[in-house]
Length: 368
Image (cartoon, rainbow, N blue to C red; front, side, top):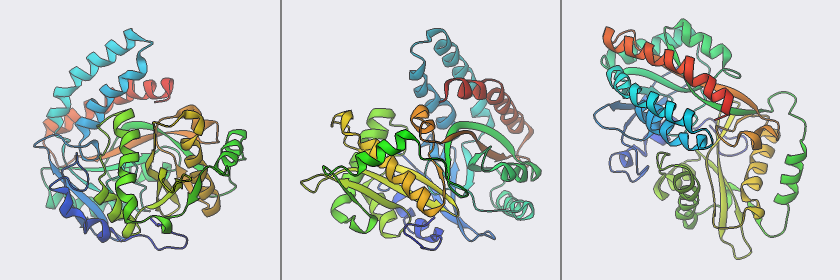
């Protein structure tokens, strides 16, 4: 992950150094976890640890990710009440199964406390070594890696399978790959660029973000992800925004209006050749015609083109992203459970079966 042009990969210790705020909610208001480091050939990676005693944010809690968040997503099926009722019933029946799996009792390497965590390059022997170390250190915890997708991470998926991991379908994400020949400049992206160049807003770079902006960024993110979407998304506080900005972990680009107020922001995170936008926010009270989201995505797409990155645009807004050249990819969560009791392993295998037989068709059919 790199905040600026030519910046080195960010030290995981910088994120771990903020971890004291995870106990009292001053970093992420709805997340409780323990954050340390795990050594790998790719360098130290952040490692979260949860004991499954109480639900927390979906970043560290599969029961929230697969059940509570999925329940919230049923709003997309208002035009199909029969399907909505059937999925609601299925989620209800799955809750005891997920409880039996104990998946909320987990350690999660490469957890940058973001929705999407690009993976470093790991060979099978190295992955097996890391896994063996974690299972010895946490014998009652599943080992979980998030954010593997079936398109850009295909070789990595094979590595995880060979190392004994089960792959649980998670969501559908959209990839804008500029690592080789960048995608053609689509009509919608051209229009977004023209809108970004309009004089009513001034685009600002990370070096123009200051202490006075931290609370505003947190508020803009909350208006979109917590108020408009669901409060199950991570509730990043001003302290978190300030910490990751000052440590160079996330590069914030924004739009200031004529009065100098920040009305929109996109935070870009890089790991190797992959870029994500884990923090996006704008003043949702302004008219849609102002096009703040379009302008922010124009910034992200331009950065991907300039830096020759694979821009993982995450989930949602399927039509918007496809119209700008992104392609769909199924994302998986890799779970290692071979060291756990048979009952828990059986429950995890059953969950995988439900997700493969029901979850994948729903994701593909409705582009969630």
